[in-house]
Image 1 (cartoon, one colour):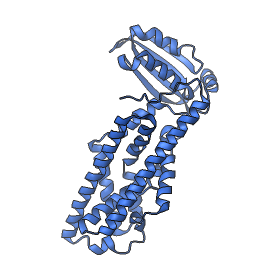
Image 2 (cartoon, rainbow, N blue to C red):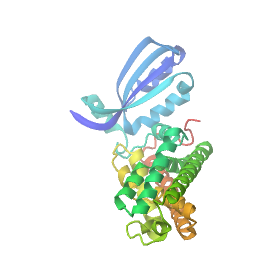
Image 3 (cartoon, rainbow, N blue to C red):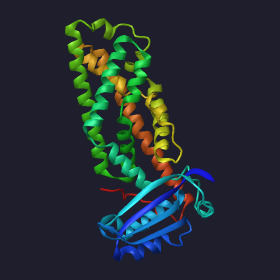
Length: 324
């Protein structure tokens, strides 16, 4: 028995007229270990269902061929990770596929996640606002623990990573979508935090001294330096690898490494008290971190694309062909 994420299960719902082409793509392909065919099982579109187990390293080549057939226009291709499998055939397929499954990037998965993470919705806005409010409280009480909590709660990394992907793929629609989401998200969160801070000021819960006084535990939030940019670069690169690789687990480290949400919280506090020094330092911190993360995301994906194209010369990676 082999426990791995190296095998993907494809379920293709296809019109009858495309079924022969789909079967030609998957049946007998060296990266495919099992094929199923259910004639007439699909009602919408009216047609068939074809299933296939494919080694992760070879998925792009097969998905590209299915896309060339137009299956994505007239049918559906579902892609599922297989956690545990027992199959000598799957082992042989994985052995023939180029490179390592942990390094393989399935561009269709990455693209779909990028679009989902870049959508501006109430869930994104709620998490962004709560994280920024929590960060402002952490600043007032000078709590490093609360600051970390706010950083973990923030949902911004997905949209930042999408900017890097959009630049690599030259998908300007995705770039505009992610940029809009980040701009509106931070703008609304800062505005709400400013109103909450003004309320706290009127109630006497927060004073000017709380904002501009010594804060050894959270001073880094408004004191950007060269390390801020370096940390953003390293953390974002690790985060993108976690999003694209079969091996995950690095995202939590990204969330508690980069000072984006705390900086936004400090901007809200500074606006409420007219603390322009705090605002200036926090805005610089925010811009430095966002720029560093976007650059790192772009560079990491660019390198992955370049390296993988050399490892797998047969593979027609889906460059510039993410869903609209």
